[in-house]
Length: 240
Image 1: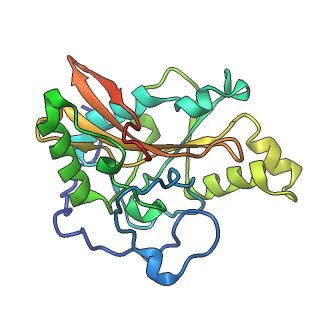
Image 2: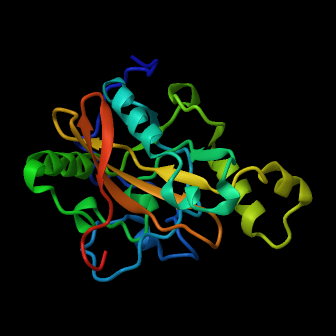
């Protein structure tokens, strides 16, 4: 087992928990929009890349989820978008330390808005959706030592994420900041992983950010085959 600290999950009553944080995205939004409500997909574009987020409210990874959660994050690295960039070949990977929740995505499209349950395991999918609905406002603080990756990577704090974004997009950024992040083509954001009751099916949101070239997040559905997590689907709902 990984060295994740046990913590009592208090998720059940947190559906309406409100974080006084700016919504992620581009530009200011009215204060009323600060509480994201899952919406049906009406030919919307994929969620915009996170612009600002904070460690406020993040909790340690619950021990009963640690092994499978980190195994899924590892299996999805590097993100497909970043991996396809010529500049990313052999480059160091960057993962956001704090997972994103529904308040951090705009629009906060739920997993069932992008994915359809597999006919052979609809129950597992629906149970994972129920886990998402219960815990969608939770943020998890990830720990670098819990990852088992055979590739150079960094776990970026919210401040690091802001610095990397500035290095890639700001017109007046210092040469020191540009040099600091030159080895990283972008950063990958994950949500918490949401499971069925048997931990054999899972849903996770992933967003690869790389300045102006990428940034479209999406939900992924995975199933455990033996002792390995295998991705079964990406966006499959028309118009998502």
